Length: 265
Length: 265
Image (cartoon, rainbow over all chains, first blue to last red):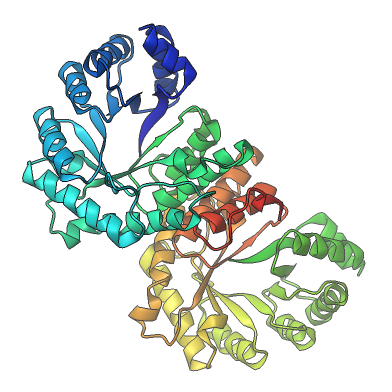
């Protein structure tokens, strides 16, 4: 599976302060740690970034990629900050994420195509989270159709069924699994040239749960989702038990070779 | 899921000694512990039991059920010991297990029918473990046909795709998942009146792996199998992390209600 490291977010005080002071050092450190722990992509969440978003995104992308050889997931609601980031990004970027609203799709899909970047399409709209599985499928189908319209290869499209907190919306957590299963059938249902990929923002599931439960909820949910065909997840790669669960999953499904020492690799 | 506690086996020194001395106390203690930890059935493995098997099985069944209110899974290759156990067992027993050999099926299926007991049919024969998924399906179809022939209700038939050690036969571990998926389609494939149930002997997966890996391998594999439709497993219910994984699975798939304290129940 493709691991996207979630830790660089302006919501955290360390990152918030670093961004305010344009002090790249703590951010580079977090990017390195996550890469070393197994992240394939590093998510860079700069929040709404309504002021100087373009300059901020370019600064953070260049600062990280000058020191860490990893592609980034650009994460902000500010669309021109996304484009500014894509302009300076080296390698295949990921746009995280686009909701099923037509006005957004009509800007971000062409950008993803132009810069040959991956893009996450998420099963919600500006109106909020859909109440049932069918509405998620409907939104996702619109996103897939938009990708087709703008000529984005299916392998660059990552569909997100929306993970919600089990402590608040337990039934929706099960709905997310059901939606994921149907996403895996879209190739056939929509006669697509190839399977779109799937992704989740995992940690949402344990939001509002006690700290002692978070890692257990996260890794258990990830194993259920992987068993249902998940291709990628935005996670905390520094959670050792979570990464061990992923390695063990790969062993048991014959993706990597077993050795008594497989956890140490 | 239905939990079958695996700990009472003559292979263990404590149980072996207790059986030899007809000292029921340690066996009753193990049955109680497993029941309190969440076991629905208590497996009683008396080995080949070629000498005095009938008397031994009746002694152990009566000793446990006099003190612990739980049904038992009778586990031995000695068929007359199985029948002797069924004669004195209270409630719905489970016969664990019958291979796909016609001579065995022709004795054990009628017994399961006569005593209204559950029976585990396992995807191997006296010749050994089948090399591929298709051969497992073939054996299991013979078992299902035998159950139909003798009028056993599908809800009492538990199909076991055979778990093997990942340290020795990694590919077979993946084959077991694939076979399980097909077992879940048998109702449609064979036009059955109802779904047969599925079961595994979980701990086999971590046999020959270092002690530090066993619990992780067991619980990860169980979550993969549950996500693929497993109904029941023969496990060590005293493995707290394994039982927590099962509870968390039930929470995330909306089978039991979430509470911050769900692990403590």
